[in-house]
Each structure stands twice: as structure tokens, then as C-alpha cells.
Image 1 (cartoon, helix red, strand yellow):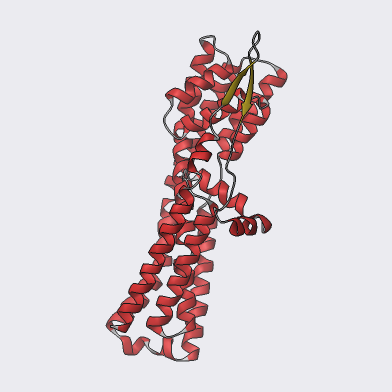
Image 2 (cartoon, rainbow, N blue to C red; image 1 turned 135 degrees about the vertical axis):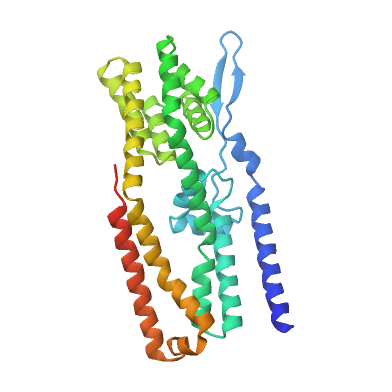
Length: 321
């Protein structure tokens, strides 16, 4: 009963902490949304002058002390970019709070059930990175969706240019007609230009918001055309064909390396599966690996070699194009 009570208290504390973090994160959400809009005031009687103001809530945490700490160690900016690329509305402080909560909870639960510090550290190592891995996964999914829709967006841009529209007007059409996340990213670029940001800087910011080699090809082609001249529609059409050819090559590589990736997955999971099977069916045979010092050393060495082999196989089958 005591164990169940303590575990329940830990879970309750983790949930309360997460809820507080979400509440603190929602504070200032309206200000961040307001920072994406243009605030204009009509001044003057004869000639209307418009003064653009942008309000942006750039705090890393709603807690002032925590915000200053994140700024002092120079990690808040990188975490903020990761969260933005994942398409999530969360402050860096909330993500760090979730990581710390799960890490402490994993340590306490593992140490309580197994009565060993090593088990607690293992529980911390397993539970702590979960929020970070989830955000990284969301980022991967969003970047992959952008890469999938980007060639069609370029085709739409080319059609608008051939219809006689300017590049900015063509980007405006893309920001209205394309699916997410292409729509929102093009809309931000168009809005930055409307706010008076230099064209080159706006496109550079575009590449910083999205991790895509194809987008860098696109921005390079546009900037070169502005410097040297030429038919922008034809250049972008060639760029779209290049991106599609690159996707085709990546598909061929994925097909040719499928056997190697499958072999690597089997070799990585087979020893762990055999160890769990032996522990379940013949615990007396497996006990020396846990209870004896030499057995634990052998398990550590085997685990290290397994990780090294997995990394080597991954390096072999990973071909960049």
C-alpha cells in the first residue's frame, strides 16, 4: 500500500507541475499572436502615414528568474527554434520543466522499486528525454510535410509569375492556396516584406525557420536571379524539377538500402530480445549477469558494442543526396 501511495503522489505531483507549466505557457499567448499582426495608425491629415509596430513576447519562461537563467546559459534560443519548427505553441521553459519533471519522476520510481541508485539513473535517462524526443519527432514530421508540398508550391508560384504577377504577389497566392505548413511559412515571409524587412533578409529568415535543403536551393535561385537577371519562372521551374529528381533518387536509395536497414534493426533487437526471453524462461541461468560484478561488466561491454555496431550500420546505409 505504501508503494502504491508513494507512486500515486509522484504521479499527482508530475501532473500538477505539468498543468502549472501549461497555464504559465498560455499566459502571453495573445501577445505572441499579436506580434504576427500589423498594427498601423493613421497619422496626418493630408497624407496618411502609417507607422508599423510589432509587439513580440520573446520571454523563454513566464517566470522571470527562469527566463534570466535560460538567457544566461544561451540555450533558450535553440530550444525556441526547435519548438517553432515542430509547430508547437510552447515556451522553452515549459519544455525544460517537463523534461525535469519526467526525469525526477523516473528516477524516484525506478529507485523505489529496484532500491538501487543505478536503476534510478537509468529511469531518469529513459524518462527525461521523452518530451524532447516528442518535440523532435513533431519537427521531423512537419519538415517532412513541408518538403513534400514544396515542389507543388513552386509550381503554383511559377504559374503566378507566368500570369504576369510580381514575385511578392505570387508568394501571396502561395500563402493563400497551399496546404500547411507551406502556407504559414510563405505568409510569414510575405508579411515580413510588408513590414519593410529587406527582401534578401526575409528569404534568409525563411531558410532559418525551415530545415530544408530544397528551400535553400529555391532561395539561392531567387537571389541569384535578382542579382544577375534572367527568367525567374524558368529558373524556378527547373528548381522544382531538380527537387523532384532528388526525391526520386532518395526513393531509389531507400529501396536499395532496405535490406541493410532491416538487417541492422534485426541485429540491434535480437540480443535484447534473447536476453528478455532468457530472463523470462530461465531466470536462474540469467541471474549471474545481474548479481555478479563480472556479469554486469559483461552486459555493459556487450551493450556498448551493440550500440557501436548499430551506429556503424546506420552510417553505412545513410546516403546523403
